Image 1 (cartoon, rainbow, N blue to C red):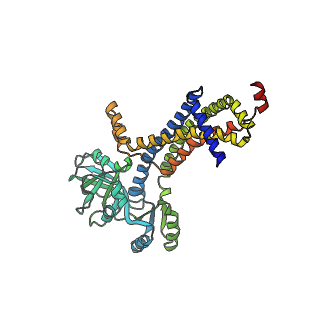
Image 2 (cartoon, helix red, strand yellow):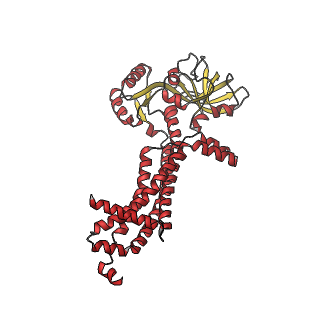
Image 3 (cartoon, rainbow, N blue to C red):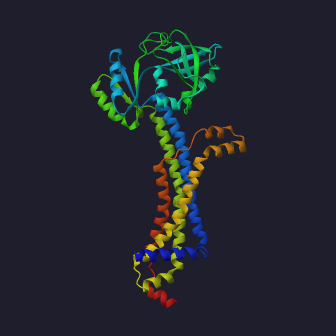
Length: 408
């Protein structure tokens, strides 16, 4: 206990003297480098998480589900739904049909679309869908038998509003005859917006249980399952495949594989580029500590002559580096949290400053700080200073005590 106290006291005294000495600027720049490195990396990663998680959550909640089941016949459909909902980790399970189609407005404007027939419970009772599908016009309900809900971008492309009617042509499965089904008219009762632009620009929803809602009755029936944790997909597929061997189950990891891979690669490269800041800071701290050791060789010789061990003298400079890292990493963490909490205001400020409407779009996407990532970045800031001071302190007694005292 006594040893640690005098080591801390000496390290603190050296830091106090250095604030007024020749190494003051170098030490300050080292702490500022760690501060800005931690702050920049946390902010950049949090903004990137906000963009990526918005895309991923919209895809999983609205488009792909966590697990999809195909090759389902009408007889076993209800049994499969009951089995899925009985599992403790299953959040929701719904039957649906998918088809590619062509939407035609009353003005003759045409646009390709993805049509999904779902039950009304999918919109009302699925918490994930309600969170991701933001109603911007009308109601996200099948108020009529021919109701249709569509994405905001698709509605703009077709130049339609709530209450307008559109015609739908459906591309039947490859086994069916003909290219397009007969045209059927639907009334727009709801327009939604989500965090993924491809869904906004292509998806339409109609009532699976409606009498006249499915233009192509031959469309295959599917099941979409969501879990409390998306990583339960493998366990569910393994158990459900034993109960329903003729049904084909697919995980969310198989859908949009290339898109998720690009997002992961983009995040890793961004992390690597900003992480180079810590490498530069570590080199700066190493040079500054090396200079400090050279300037303190007389004090080091005195400590050694008074009986201080090599490890204790090393600990003085290691603690010195740790203090440099701590004084940089803690303010960097606090500044990063403050910026992330006010990211919307910052983007709106730049939007008013530059008149660039894209900043207003960015302001709608919140920065998401993942605790484990923030902790790792904070530790990188500390460890860069700690490692630099450790490598310098290994040569702290290269000059012998007798040589120093003789020169003095």
